[in-house]
Length: 436
Image (cartoon, helix red, strand yellow):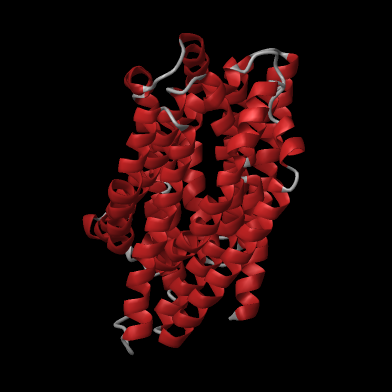
């Protein structure tokens, strides 16, 4: 188990390192322009994409956990059934977002705070990136399915290809064609469809198996979708609360001025990088815990949880040491504005408590996702967002204090760790048996 965990963690970290590069590439390349308006506009627009795209990240999470459990039961037919049904949901949702793109844009930007030039830039980015919706959602499903089958190498190759494409297209569209924020959006859209095509290539080798599965089950039966949508509804609520927390943090930041918003956008992207590093261990925990649940291995579940928490904390500490040790040089890569870099340095040390507390929360997330305990994750997120985050964040808004805003994010991570930790302790270290 230990060998498999570290192997999956290694591949997942390599794959996850490339995931936040989408946002980092947009931020860094737009930061090379003479004005920070375009960078701030993309940061504002990403509030909407956090809802639209990461709101559907339950497609990745539920697919990984359910697939891992099916693999643990050695039920190949169920594994492919999960893939096909999840792809149906992803495709329908993606095309629905395209149909409603103008309405979503108008309503979304009416709620966002920001200077007019910043909002105009964000609006251009939104309408160029929204075309990636079907590709992004299908990629969530395919990524989750390959991770659930412990095929992290395929996910690694796909994410490297997509993000390399995004980076090169960003340089071309933004710096050479001068399409500014719209160019960054088009680069991201094209890279997502490149990723989708790559994911579909390994499935061509499975076409015989897919044909067998389609013959043996009714893909579109209501009973087949019921269990999938039931789990997804809990994870969806959990994810929407998570996104709302970070979106509110970013929206409150915009009320402190475009320079503070730009500085917080840089720090937010760095936190995402750190989170994706830690998520390598979290996804490995998710995959193995799902398989162990399928095998009904209670002692194995306890061991993988301990191993995941230790690994997650070690990864977060290393990340903080690496980035904060070179903060001045690091922040200078993202913006030519001396004031933005200065502000990023002033508030940069909040990365440390946010990620150190967040590391354990991310591992708990992966653990409970692997066991498909959506209600546990939903309830924890309700308490963390409404009790540990919101009152402090609103206080920061009233006081116009960015330090208090960062304190609210730190408290939020503490709340997630505390609530999930209590549940895990009661289930696995107080009770001597668990119904799996």
